[in-house]
Length: 100
Image (cartoon, rainbow, N blue to C red; front, side, top):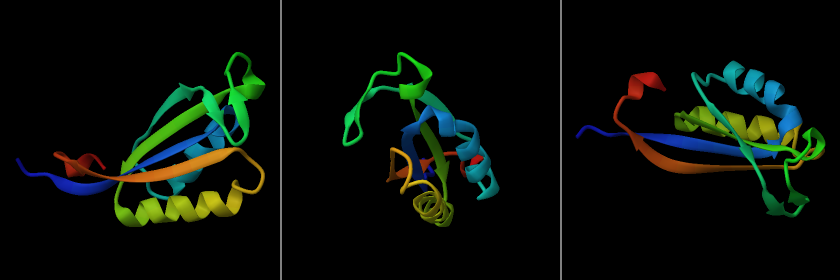
């Protein structure tokens, strides 16, 4: 098995930011992503997702280390002060590096 190191970037935030986030990460070099609905409780309170104003999303992408760093820096500068947002990265290995 030939596995290649990459980063999994996971962003959990307000659903209203979905289009802007997709535009941002694509501009930063991301080739693909997955968006799912998210519910839970954190420092911003309970997010039930029952109506658009309280809906959250989980956006995930696989990319190289530099793109992951660029995403984190950009989101911290543009969104962290005004939106409920969590970003974390994980070290992963992929078998088809050309897809990312």
